[in-house]
Image (tube, rainbow over all chains, first blue to last red; front, side, top):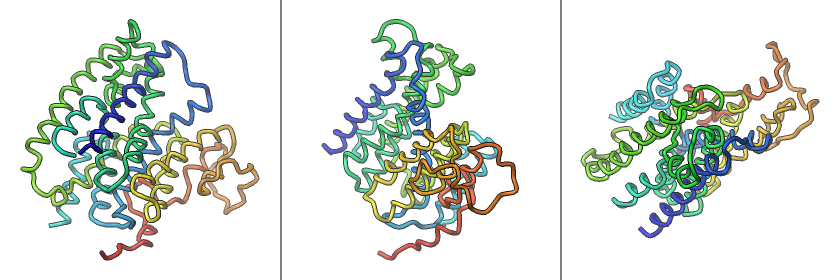
Length: 100
Length: 244
C-alpha cells in the first residue's frame, strides 16, 4: 500500500512539473533542435513498447494468444478511423469471444 | 492498488497512459523506480506539447501551472489550430471536462469495478494495448516517428524474456535516438541499437521503390514487433509460451 502511494505521489509531482514546464518556462520558445527531435519521439517509442509488451508479453515469455487477435481487430478499427472507444471495445470483445 | 490510490492518481496525474502503465508495471511485480520512470517517460511527450502550446496560456506562472495541468492528448489535439496556434478556451475547457469525467470515472470503477467479474474473461487485458495503439497512431506524424515506434516495440519485445518487468518499456526510449540521425540516411536504424552508421552501410538487397527520401528506408525495417500493423508476425511465435 505504501509502495502504491509513493508511486502515486512521485508520478503526480513529476507530471505536474512536466506539464507545466512549457507553459511556465516558455511563452514562445522551442526546445533546441536535436533535443526537441528526441523528445518528440518519446511518446511514439513508449506507446509502441507498451502495445508490444501488453499484447504479446506473458511474464517472461513472448506469446501470441487471444490478445493478439484483439489487437489485430483494433488495428483494423484504427485504420478505419473508428473512435477510440470503438477501437478499445472491439479489441476487448474479440479477445473475450475467443476465450469463451 | 487499493481503492483510494487510483482516484488520487487520477486527480494528481491525470494522464491515462502513464496511469495504466504504472498499474500494469506494479501488478506485474515491477519496482517503484520502474513504474515512476515509465510514467515520467510516457508523460515526457507533454514537454514538447507544452512548449508547442505555451503561447496559448495567459497570466502569471501560477495560473499557467494550474491551467497546464488540464492539458491531455485529446484536449491538445482538439484545440490545435495548426502549427503552434491553439484555442486556449478549448484547450483548458475540454481538459477540465475530461478531468471531471476522468476522476469521476475512476471512482466509479473503484466502487463498481468488482461487479464486472474477471477482467480477462471480458478481454480487458487487450483493451489497454488497443488504447495505446489508438493513441500511438494518433501521434504518428512522421516517418521518424514510425521508425521510433517500430524500433521501440522491437527493443521492448526483445527484452521481455531477460529484463525485469517495466524495464523493456523504459529501454524502448533508446529508439528516440533515431531523431538524432534525421539529416543522414538512416539505414542503421534497422540494426538494434545502432544509431550512426555511415551512409555507405546500405549494401543489402536493393529495393525497387524510390529511395530518394532518406527516412524511407527506416520505416521498412524488418522488425517483427510492429504495433502499427494489425497482422501479428509469425516470427513472434519463435518464443512459444512456456508452461508454468
